[in-house]
Length: 185
Image 1 (cartoon, rainbow, N blue to C red):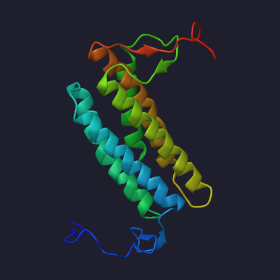
Image 2: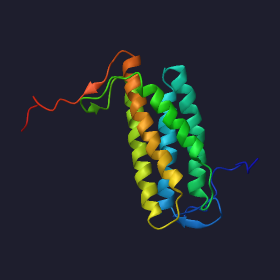
Image 3: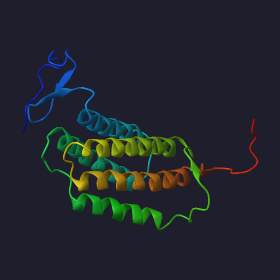
Image 4: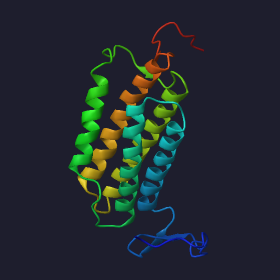
């Protein structure tokens, strides 16, 4: 087992730097720190979603995703490591396909909403999209495995489908965007 934190503050970051998993010190606003920080934020957003009543199959999948996101954050924090793999991506795709199979085809855009769980899922989806963008930004000047980007891309797709499932499961239904009939001013 790894190191245990016995003291939360170390004062080593007071100069605006932080330590990566390999011991390298980088600026706290570096692309790498932004990327794994947003993955951490996404994991927290999933924790908020999991704190709500949701179907058991969704709870099981999201709990597994939280562990995978912790691995993905570790991969980003330790340059050169590989912790997320094709099997993780395939599991997301399988779950996404299974949930999507029971949904009607989309004919309109969906607004974030549809009840608290669905809205929380939409929020997690948008954080996931931001994490993906930040990992792509990181990949422009540091090595990032393509599986890392694909995992986040597929996860955001899965969260979109899950938000649709959750909106229907709690009886609120999806909130559809009305293209016409809005006041313009």
